[in-house]
Structure formats: structure tokens, C-alpha cells
Image (cartoon, rainbow, N blue to C red; front, side, top):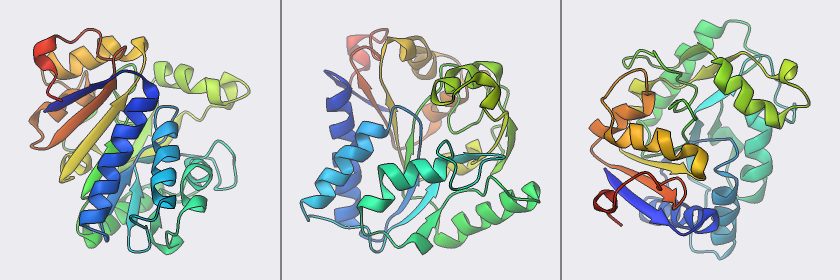
Length: 248
């Protein structure tokens, strides 16, 4: 595990965007796994800025998002499809046929999960997976007690996650309670992983993910076993790590 600590959120976003840009320069037809939420917004803004400089493009890139709320249509402003269009896809030259996000309106959720997993495998697996981390250690929507061997599946969201995500909705009653998420097994099969975290609110769970036991109680702890994972943290998120933890 490599840990990079930056001075602030903006620098964290820039470091992450440069890493993804390097991936696309080296392998223009990369398969990217993408995350949503508050933390990656600056990362996507910086990635679009780098794209506009013309050193790489998205025309051969395929993407697979980590998750989507169940019950939200693509045109719902709180859906992750809408989020991705607004923050990245409408600003770059990606072929929307190469964009994959779970269908939050799927009538047969089990089938949608199987099909999503099949498409990831058919594409050859994920070259670089971008992750955030929840206050309870979830990655994707894999909540504590998740089975590490799980592939893409339906999840019931923890109350803590619902509370955290309510800031994006008019009221907590509007927050969906279920989602489709890539599983831990799927995430761990990515060839490279970068995890972004910002703010003092993430400091405790970052320490647990890095130094705690590998346990389903902290889903992100499984990343200790991945052969190529980089945590990119601002100094507040890294505030409960020691100097010896920092590798870059």
C-alpha cells in the first residue's frame, strides 16, 4: 500500500487526476472504475481540465461505475448517472456506449447485477479503480459485514450511510435505502486502485483501514491485501497516521 498525503483537497484532486491521466496516456483503451459522492468532484474537474489540454482523450476508454441507487432514474439529479454526466462525461469525448452504470430502475435486480458483472469480465476487467471511503469504511456501497467474496449485488444501506448522503437530498426521507454495488471481489480484481479521502471526518476510518485488522466490519481494510493500491489523502484525512506510513 502506498500513501500519498497532500496539503489540501485541491492538491489531492490534482494528484489523483494526474494518476488517471497517466494511465490513459499509457493505455488509451483503459477500463476505468469510477466513484461518485462529494470527494471525487474536484478530481473530475481536474481530469476535465487535463483532458482539455489535449494530452489524452477518452474515445477508446470504457468505464464502469461502482454503484447506483435503486429507485432513481437516469434523469434524477441525485442519480449517479446524472452525477457522472454532469461532472465528467458531458465534458469529454467518451463514447456513451462505453459508459456503464448499474440501472437503478431495473425490474429484475438480480439479473441486472449478473449482467453488470458479466460486462466487466467481458471487457477484460478494470485497469484502474477509483474509490472513496465512507465514514463506516464502506467502499462502493459495500457496508460493514459485507461478504468479501461478493460480486456485483444489491445492498441495503446502513443508517449511517443514509444519514451521510442525506446532505445531497431535500430530506432524509428522500434518500434511497437500497443500491446496486460492485462487490468487494470485483473491486479487488482491479489491477490498480486509488482511494481518495479528505477531511478530519475520515481520519479515524483511514487509520482503521490502514492499520486495523482485515475484517468485514471495515470493508476498506481488505485493500491491505491488494498488490497495487494508493491512498491519496489530504493532511486532515491523514492526521491519525504516522510519518512512517507516508510513502509519497
